[in-house]
Image 1: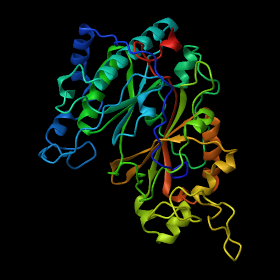
Image 2: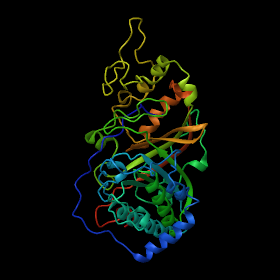
Image 3: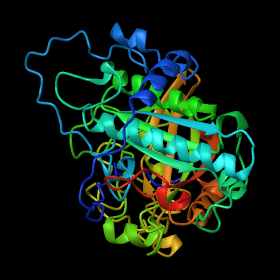
Image 4: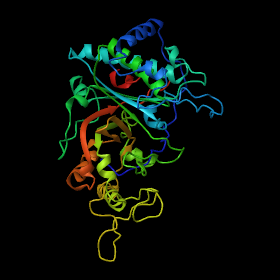
Length: 418
């Protein structure tokens, strides 16, 4: 984990939206998406047939075989349209899939046209689904619009090829000691994250988004599913080491300084740094509890720092035992990721767990920053001396410029592509 186990992020309220207007639609395009979706379903891993019989993407039952008696009322849908993308302003939903695509090299004008088409198609698909008018009947539930969220980002190679006006310094982080990165699992011209309240909705939406990408000429590069544990509202979810993961994300004021771009065309945009981190859960679980907590710098039971009594207490990095040793050890994860060591800089973290095989499970780390140098500084400290390093292996990496949202009546990328 390249950052302090932080809290499930607060919902950062976006600025006010302009008056609503209906999104574009097109029955011809809708039919094309449905036809292409059938072709791409298997390639994108959307095993809808299994889900229909109650099997989860992550193993076990989806709960679809349960009776509705006594079920809680459906939660409100998350609006797609807004000045920031819903995958950042809404709550984290329990099921997610990250998808990366490449645009085959072509003339800059042809690539721009393909990108413009794809962003418009994704806007139509995602906005219609969030509004309860999805193009596929499988997404029309009995309890109102499906609960979904999404974000779209552009990779540095695509931005450079098309000379797009993205923030300076958009680039992959440098190599860090201990990295074991698989190029086939990282990078990409476009990155799409889809999240949903249930695996069924996520599988169908993944299929349709992949069909739109195929129609626009984009080629799948990699995909990765993730999940959150069952967590009561307002509580911090735990990672696969059993520790609370997500306690000190920035509030809106801090996010304006460290997460969102400066005033101007990028002020509702950000940069995503994604890392796929394999966790040796068995080896970590074999440690005595006090060694686990010393490595993390927090207590497992309540998430409190070793110097505090409650989860959200500020870690005291200077507190010492009578023998002069730091209460929070010098190599503790919490200490090395502390904002005090980085001029107060904070990242917005929205991580997920993954479980792809008995020996391949861990964390899908997603940090949102104004400048990738923020991540590089923190990860450099961690790679050098984090006590968790024996239990972590970074296996994939990606960076993307996360577009501003699409206010009502507009499409993603309209400001960037004209």
